[in-house]
Length: 454
Image (cartoon, one colour):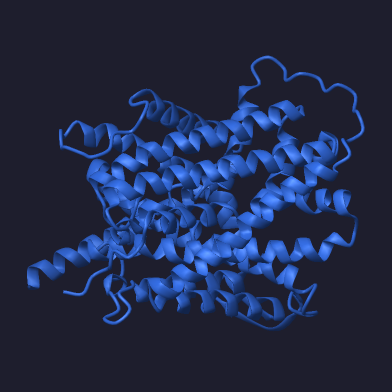
């Protein structure tokens, strides 16, 4: 029987984590976070807290992956602990928005930077438009370039772990080296920002501000668990998945803190508030307007690396779902020559292209951002359920039960606070998730019908 091959080592898997996490968000999210918090200390504190929570989650996922070294990540853990519907909804959200939406957003973002070097690549003016029910599909130079990038990455990863791994490793090496160089040179040449009037401390009981700020922060950290999606393709997963998650998550946390510290050194907190592109502002302040081209090239590499990692990781979730008859059965096919879930990879690329044409990816990502935190918390909670089964394991999460319990507590508090403070966004996100329930019912009916006729 044709199956997935274990060809990835610990460094390959750590690269997937780093590249999945670090996207254009680290250049844009700090402005959103600054607008939610009263001062620089609070801003750095929430990024440090996000890194600590991500590391605690990575430890729990490490144990889960050693117990269940299969493709699919959260889908597998929730299936084992909370049943098929909970597992399906995490996979559904990943397909509809989590991976495909992020890939679509990244591709459109790349066109904006490419336009600096290839004029017209980011032009949004419609060449043609079509109506598909309530959606309007717009063809433009921007959408054509974005779809070309999505399809190219999908074809590379469908062709095997060999070419996909080499491309991923190269993009990540350039990305991490460039960001580290940006931080080091930035601190060497930076002139401290002009002193600002002391910011008023946060009012008593302002924990809801921290919880709200943790939503974009944790969304920026999302992907720290990426290695578990490809656990079925990692050599000696009992040893190498924990190594990959720890190394990848720690690398991201250090880079994120260093970048935010640099931003706050060269720009006052007030200048960060609401800024759309904090990275570009810092680069201009440090190196002048001539740095714009260099920063645009860096942004292209950063986003392409993130898109590539998601193109690799996401389809393993749908592959696992299809293997359980919880998704289109063709998504469970493994290419006979390349040993990849090629159909699942191309299905994700097709949906991403549709999101690019319809322009709906921004809304989906906004609505489902807290769902990423919700399902991560449920996955970590499943560790308590799986441990009660008494199975032996080669790795036990450090800090158990306190670290995973804290991760779950903060995660559920963030979700509850989002519902209370931003009910429109929260209920829209819950609506996206709920739309998967009839799809799940259909897959169960189809599976039962197939079993009766077998």
